Image 1 (tube, one colour):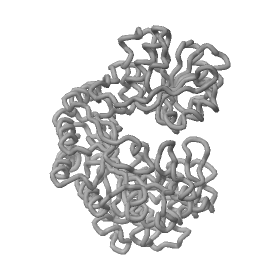
Image 2 (cartoon, rainbow, N blue to C red; image 1 turned 120 degrees about the vertical axis):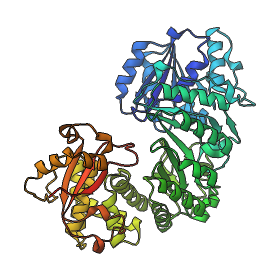
Image 3 (cartoon, rainbow, N blue to C red; image 1 turned 180 degrees about the vertical axis):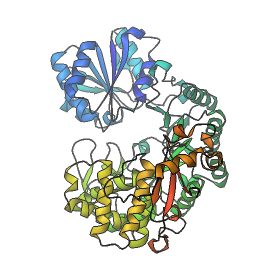
Length: 589
């Protein structure tokens, strides 16, 4: 009995946690040669995936189903069944655990659906199939019998977390991919847009097991471990013990990503977080909206004042990347209400502000009340909302344009000083800036094609000039600073002025030949020859003192117009938090 566990991930760098759990759950009953995991991405061609499945020739073909891959799985299963009618096709995952009967009626290629948490159910199903037993006795599945879709009895209780197998082995870990891991299941909250609201309570893995598994990831040199716990800090003592262990054991290579509820982080945790090394932790913080009416309807209770204080305190330490989320399309959130939510959150200056568009997930509270809120949404995964009682389709299109500008010009992290200068001098609303940038972008036809990084700098400079904002030359120098912070290059795009200084290259080498200079500005390069250091740094003259822009709060009139030399050091601790260090220097006379 050959079993193929198939994952269609959203990106190549992702790993699928579910299929690894399933593989380990049956490792003692199915020979390792007879069960295999194959991971693809939704960017692979369907025909390629079908060929790979056909070449493996499984008896049982299993898919892990989510909103991002369900359309492809529907196509693939239909075609596989035509060329391999004898194969048994088994689906599982959140996308097939609701409206299962409709799914199976619409796609007769599906033989069995595993409903809900699948590890124990899958194990019982594989045992029954291997032994030719009656799998109608397996709890938590739907299957076909005599032309009918039959549901077995639902599981009365969920298995303990302790019973879950550890899903990874050294062979299954790729140091360049994100490793997904969970220390808990469930969520203490009841947000109506989320599937976690369909199951109450939170279950935790034993803490010593979590420590051992984290140690394993660190020892294996994994680049990033992304905890999929819905609320990592639901239990303070548990979260603190995990983070303390990581702090004690880390080796500077592995980064840990957590989804946290920020207003639950107390002063003890914040004091601890201020001590962690740069880039060791990343936080994802779901705000979703700052409209109280909206939050009450979706049953999300957030103290935004406390959340703001927490985000600002973490930002002050400059050691933890923070990613804040908003959702377009929630009840009672119209265009102007969303504008306020955006301005409230952007004022916190997170490293990333992700604007999501509401998906009406099967089984979620908002989907069940879609008619009440005037939701018009796609019939196809991911079931994205197109209209609401408060937002027209035109509003949503405009917000998608704004989201694109935020993604390009803020979340990329390579224009931050330039964006700060524009907003601080010419806009009382950050939303208004991104909205106007999108209008300009669209009017110029930039939305029709993709653009190089250099072109993006050029477009922002053109936007500045088109608006007739004062201080164009000062702005271009700040834009040049952003460019060089993120690009080590002796070539500058034509929009930037290059200040010519006689004998500049020789002066740069002489500066690096000074032991005092290297010790002062580049201590990591001590005892390294200047000809080697020059490969890791860059010197650039500016016509204004760009090193003071944050101190003068980006006010154009306060940025001194005088020639300065800036030294850029590209050896950095964490790309997620900084692009490079830079210093104002002077050449010896």
